[in-house]
Length: 467
Image: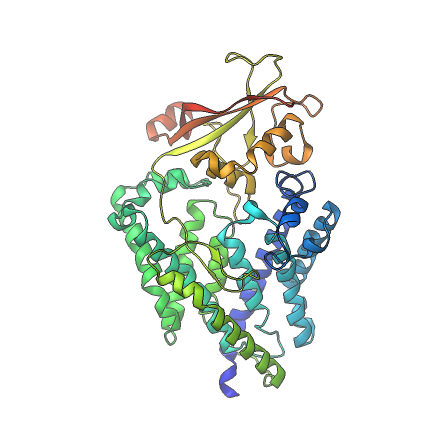
């Protein structure tokens, strides 16, 4: 079938696949370095406890069949190894069928992690990585030109990511319709980056322009992805520029980067198309079957997207093959942070020597400037942002965090930037207090050197010790 492949997109496919492999590598590295404290046998939300109550059909995973910390670590590091091999181009050195199988390995391994990851993995970019990774496995290698069906379906994912996010904003917080959300967002976003303070202090008229441009990019431009070239490339390039702007403004894990990866499917990069043989019949049949399956599974995500009761970041099948996306349907006006402290005193008092735990990414010491971590994902720091919004978000795991801090648990302390206590001297009591944080202005920054100013609000958790 002459229409089946698009030789002009071979360089776009190459860049897309290598960039996707790099994101897989980051995702597996994040899992390997953080899982013991979060999901391990002695973690805050242990996998064995989850698999004991959730059947395989609802959460298919290798860890439903067997779990140990060593086995999880082996899967995570194996995912790193395969991702690194794909990044180096190992799929191009294999036969077509073997290249497809190799790409499905990190998808299956990461699916196993996400499906037992519970609240630590309840983010839209997890499903987005899985959906993109599964489909990209059928892009082929140097033996065939990129199939049109897969390129179209990758654009279909990008359309749902952008258009779904645009709709949830219009239907959600009124500040998106008033063009005022960026007056607050850079200050109240989950994990600010090193430039977020400066973005917040941009002139308010420029914030209005940013929001208006966001609406255009998410509600109008996605339709142009399916237009003829060079219009589709222009639309993809505009989306890439928008995502790079977001990369500079905060830490959003790999959400922005995988959106850029998806945009490459519509970006026809200038290059001379190599001469390759026609696609084998079995490959054409396989791609068409996958396309038909994904088109069928798109029914519920589309229904959700056009519904007035649209929900964000929902998977409609346990394999995360087709999902619905959206982000920041509402924007907080005030930033709260949970500050966790410990003391060695036998009897805790307000004037005890309370020492603050220092997290890697979330705001703590007002003088400490935020750092850039994305696309690496600090899962505990992100959940601490939700905990500050409401204790209900932390009900499953916050008690486990406090318990492990009281034990000076090595794996848990490894998630932090610094513990105020020596490894052999755990605190006798731990408490948590809620503070309101706001960015300082230019004058306060010059006078104090602090980018944040914080005000005590109330007790979050009273002094607690091990029973």
